[in-house]
Length: 184
Image (cartoon, rainbow, N blue to C red; front, side, top):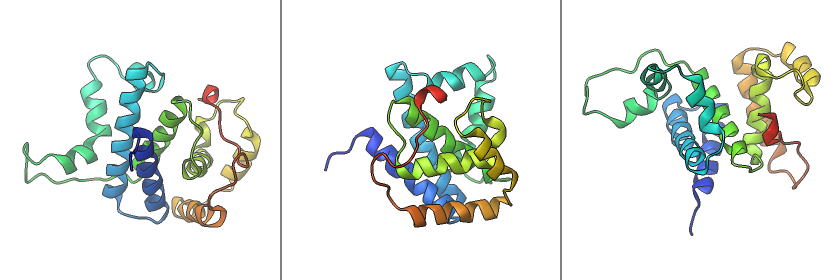
């Protein structure tokens, strides 16, 4: 069976989302998310889309190494032992994976593709947990803010995400509202 880059990215992100909601291994989630992010970033550069520009424009000149060093520190740590084989990975911020998977969803939308089911659920789970990132004219903003104001701890929200995936399964085509590319 032949797979496209997007087939692989979808599998990686979907698996990472399921692991996240199951409170799975932080490193595994990050490895899957980082690999998917890199593919989406590279495709955006090659196809001249906007996704990579979000990061390229965000980072101050001369600070690229610091930004990408922090952003990629977990995936780089797990790939390379030649620089410092006795190094320790300290202070893992579990919310880093939340942001990483959200960025993967943004990169996916930038490709012009609708979000697959797990990414769509994650998109909304993330927005509810981070309502301050929404534009004032974001669709359903008031409803999301009402839910977000009643949100509990991260642990409770992770369990809710897991239950959403289990309860709703794969939807019939056209039954779930998906954010449009122009709302990024």
